[in-house]
Length: 131
Image: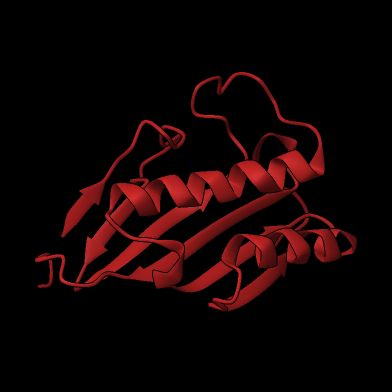
């Protein structure tokens, strides 16, 4: 097992890693819309929150030597299902023709009053980290 860390994604706020590689798979912890450069500034606009979450996912992918096209599954948590059409549009723009398996989970609330969180699993190719 190998830990993945990048300063381009938010510092873990609890007892977890940004990402973990095991058996050729990258598991990315749930990413909130926290700006890694200025984590104390709260992002309030919903589109900006979605964009920051996607940028954080991208940063962990890149730190592991992976790309968006290697993502096999995501889980998206949102605080209001009415927000889903906007998330879906931005998600589709982010992944392009690639369509990972996905679960959308409406939740009552998320940390710090944010409206979205997302985790991901990616398949790594020839990483040498297979167990």
